[in-house]
Length: 121
Image (cartoon, rainbow, N blue to C red; front, side, top):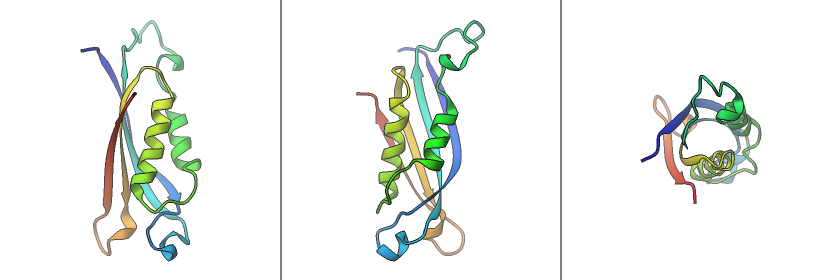
Protein backbone atom coordinates (compact mmCIF):
# COMPACT_ATOMS: atom_id res chain seq x y z
CA UNK A 1 0.00 0.00 0.00
CA UNK A 2 1.33 3.42 -0.98
CA UNK A 3 1.93 6.17 1.55
CA UNK A 4 -0.89 8.67 1.70
CA UNK A 5 -1.00 12.36 2.53
CA UNK A 6 -4.32 13.28 4.11
CA UNK A 7 -5.74 16.79 3.69
CA UNK A 8 -8.59 17.85 5.97
CA UNK A 9 -10.79 20.92 5.87
CA UNK A 10 -13.37 21.11 8.62
CA UNK A 11 -16.69 22.96 8.57
CA UNK A 12 -16.10 25.49 5.79
CA UNK A 13 -19.26 27.62 5.65
CA UNK A 14 -21.23 28.22 2.48
CA UNK A 15 -24.53 29.91 1.70
CA UNK A 16 -26.52 27.81 -0.75
CA UNK A 17 -30.05 27.31 -1.97
CA UNK A 18 -30.83 23.74 -0.97
CA UNK A 19 -33.94 21.84 0.06
CA UNK A 20 -36.68 19.63 -1.29
CA UNK A 21 -39.64 22.03 -1.07
CA UNK A 22 -39.46 25.15 -3.26
CA UNK A 23 -39.92 27.56 -0.32
CA UNK A 24 -36.89 26.03 1.43
CA UNK A 25 -34.71 26.74 -1.63
CA UNK A 26 -36.07 30.32 -1.95
CA UNK A 27 -33.39 31.83 0.29
CA UNK A 28 -29.76 30.84 0.80
CA UNK A 29 -29.06 28.71 3.87
CA UNK A 30 -25.81 28.08 5.65
CA UNK A 31 -24.25 24.64 5.27
CA UNK A 32 -20.95 23.46 6.68
CA UNK A 33 -18.75 21.30 4.50
CA UNK A 34 -15.84 19.13 5.58
CA UNK A 35 -13.39 17.41 3.27
CA UNK A 36 -10.95 14.58 3.89
CA UNK A 37 -8.81 13.90 0.84
CA UNK A 38 -6.02 11.37 0.31
CA UNK A 39 -3.09 12.00 -2.02
CA UNK A 40 -0.84 9.07 -2.93
CA UNK A 41 2.96 9.10 -3.08
CA UNK A 42 3.69 12.18 -0.99
CA UNK A 43 7.00 13.82 -1.80
CA UNK A 44 9.84 14.45 0.63
CA UNK A 45 8.31 17.66 1.97
CA UNK A 46 11.50 19.17 3.42
CA UNK A 47 12.95 19.11 -0.11
CA UNK A 48 9.64 19.86 -1.88
CA UNK A 49 8.42 22.75 0.28
CA UNK A 50 6.15 24.31 -2.36
CA UNK A 51 2.44 24.40 -3.14
CA UNK A 52 2.93 22.14 -6.16
CA UNK A 53 3.82 19.30 -3.80
CA UNK A 54 0.26 19.20 -2.46
CA UNK A 55 -3.21 20.50 -3.32
CA UNK A 56 -3.87 24.20 -2.89
CA UNK A 57 -6.44 24.21 -0.06
CA UNK A 58 -7.71 27.60 -1.19
CA UNK A 59 -9.01 25.99 -4.40
CA UNK A 60 -11.20 23.70 -2.29
CA UNK A 61 -12.39 26.44 0.06
CA UNK A 62 -13.11 28.83 -2.83
CA UNK A 63 -15.19 26.14 -4.57
CA UNK A 64 -17.17 25.49 -1.38
CA UNK A 65 -17.82 29.17 -0.65
CA UNK A 66 -18.27 30.58 -4.14
CA UNK A 67 -18.77 27.93 -6.81
CA UNK A 68 -21.17 25.18 -5.67
CA UNK A 69 -23.37 25.83 -8.67
CA UNK A 70 -27.11 25.76 -9.15
CA UNK A 71 -29.57 25.25 -6.30
CA UNK A 72 -29.99 21.63 -5.25
CA UNK A 73 -32.73 19.58 -3.67
CA UNK A 74 -30.34 17.39 -1.68
CA UNK A 75 -27.24 18.00 0.41
CA UNK A 76 -25.98 14.78 -1.19
CA UNK A 77 -25.82 16.68 -4.49
CA UNK A 78 -23.67 19.37 -2.88
CA UNK A 79 -21.35 16.72 -1.42
CA UNK A 80 -21.00 15.06 -4.82
CA UNK A 81 -20.12 18.38 -6.48
CA UNK A 82 -17.39 19.05 -3.91
CA UNK A 83 -16.04 15.51 -4.20
CA UNK A 84 -15.79 15.75 -7.98
CA UNK A 85 -13.98 19.07 -7.71
CA UNK A 86 -11.49 17.73 -5.17
CA UNK A 87 -10.67 14.65 -7.24
CA UNK A 88 -10.06 16.86 -10.28
CA UNK A 89 -7.35 18.86 -8.50
CA UNK A 90 -4.57 16.26 -8.61
CA UNK A 91 -3.65 13.06 -10.39
CA UNK A 92 -2.36 11.89 -7.02
CA UNK A 93 -5.84 12.12 -5.46
CA UNK A 94 -6.97 8.63 -4.47
CA UNK A 95 -10.19 9.27 -2.55
CA UNK A 96 -12.19 12.00 -0.94
CA UNK A 97 -14.85 12.05 1.75
CA UNK A 98 -17.15 15.04 1.89
CA UNK A 99 -19.57 15.77 4.72
CA UNK A 100 -22.27 18.39 4.32
CA UNK A 101 -24.04 19.56 7.48
CA UNK A 102 -27.30 21.47 7.31
CA UNK A 103 -28.06 23.03 10.70
CA UNK A 104 -31.34 24.67 9.69
CA UNK A 105 -33.29 21.45 9.19
CA UNK A 106 -33.91 20.63 12.85
CA UNK A 107 -35.50 23.01 15.29
CA UNK A 108 -33.43 23.51 18.42
CA UNK A 109 -30.08 21.83 18.80
CA UNK A 110 -28.74 19.41 16.24
CA UNK A 111 -28.20 19.23 12.52
CA UNK A 112 -28.60 16.89 9.58
CA UNK A 113 -25.55 15.71 7.69
CA UNK A 114 -24.52 13.37 4.91
CA UNK A 115 -21.09 11.96 4.07
CA UNK A 116 -20.10 10.55 0.71
CA UNK A 117 -16.84 8.92 -0.32
CA UNK A 118 -15.63 8.87 -3.90
CA UNK A 119 -12.52 7.21 -5.26
CA UNK A 120 -10.46 8.21 -8.25
CA UNK A 121 -11.53 6.23 -11.31
